[in-house]
Image (cartoon, rainbow, N blue to C red; front, top):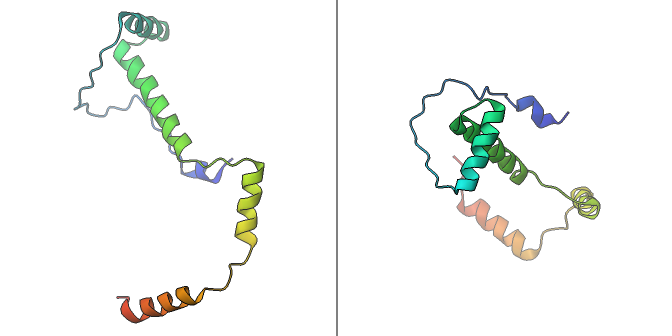
Length: 107
């Protein structure tokens, strides 16, 4: 179990949310027949089928893009970077920090 799963809330996709937007798409006859056949097999209308599966696909794309995947070498380098102490600040960084402390005041 991932820690993030503790914050995942399963939402019923059949919730009665007010539909205020229209979504129109032009499709080929072949695609229309494909969608209709698949919707019929699931016992849904074409619109419900397309919205349901479109929602699932969108959620997967969003989830995949929000995860960082590293191979073994990248993972090793990442952990080494976390465990290695940072180098001492350069003179330019020391001057910049002094200017920041002098010029920026916190509320």
